[in-house]
Length: 127
Image 1 (spheres, rainbow, N blue to C red):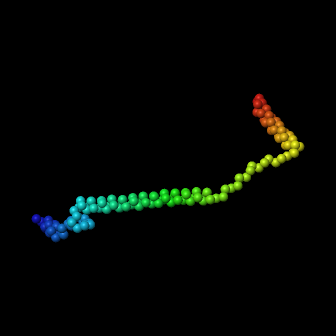
Image 2 (image 1 turned 30 degrees about the horizontal axis):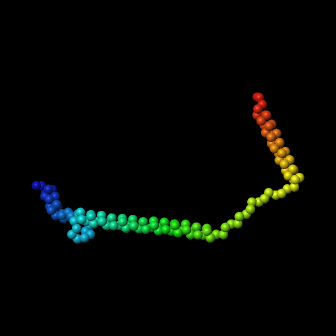
Image 3 (image 1 turned 90 degrees about the vertical axis):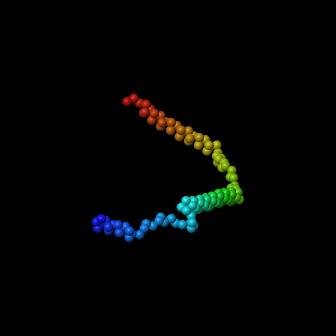
């Protein structure tokens, strides 16, 4: 053996032995499969606890929603109803006023028809 090989062997012997895998021991004496089962049970328990809390919160939210709806209905029922006003009647006019209104409406219709007729005649002309 040469000096390099001898030195390598001495270094390997002097180095500390590798440490065994560090598995956290929750309970002394548990094997690795038992440790994993224990952790799985802890996780299942925690998930069940969180689900129960979520279900409780959901039930509370539904209860509060129902109570709020009932309170709103009670408040609306306790309100005084608004008075029903009769429909406003048309103003009564004298026969002369009625005749004047009819004549002015007729004149407006004629003017509109006359203006539309001029536009139609212009659009129908031949180029």
